[in-house]
Length: 350
Picture 1: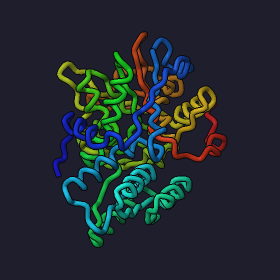
Picture 2: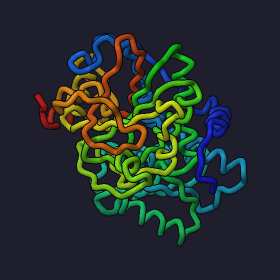
Picture 3: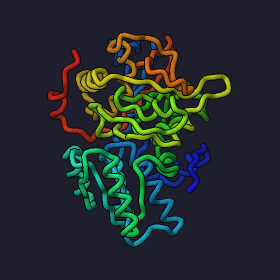
Picture 4: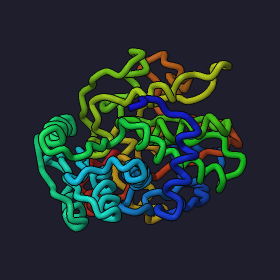
């Protein structure tokens, strides 16, 4: 398998999945985030949580399975995947559309709302361990013994290219966009978005929880490394290791610009999620609120230094993102597979 991602891959994915996913809706978000560092910026929201299965993952799953269908490489044993929930949902949904069996491995502590939806798609759901890495190991063993096609939640060029089609649509819908904020877990969405964003001269900012920083740590080390996971957003941003595709997509441009990596504390994530609900009646999971948290995090952390680690400096004192006056910023709200009750049970940061 070719472990590289280029803009041509994203264009091919866009053609392959056209008509099979919902085009993203965008909406202006004046006033949202003014409690943090967004004052003076022109803020937009990409409402990708309205996508099939409730997250952007439907794009990569469709691209992956349709590409294998075109190549004649879909086995009788079907497809298998390990997931924190959203990638499994997308894989099961896409497999159902293709008439293919899906076996999905999840951590035993995965949100019940995701488990129930998986079963509604006809997936064989297997709960293993307490972290994504344990579910992944079980999935790999199953693929080897059964002959099922192994998909991946984020670490595959076809998956990342499918995710990158989202940036193509945002670019078409928000002319003059300067910056896109995207939550990063394993980095598949960031890899695709950053690759497309670079093509259009748009800055991509990867936003991660401070205690689940797989991409941030990889940029510091110059390669993917294992990290611990301890975040309120761990169910969807809980990868121990980032994909090399994301590390490559975060490389600096020749003039020192390009993609960036920032961290946010859990308190900012919880506050962003509540602000979306209270201000807009938008209910997303913590992982999706992480992107918006970048505009709130400086106030929570007490540091406003945004000199950045997107070039791989790896410093851990950069929290949040501070846009310039007049900067046009789009925040990707990438998933909404969550329990509404957690709005009242999450720790209150205020």
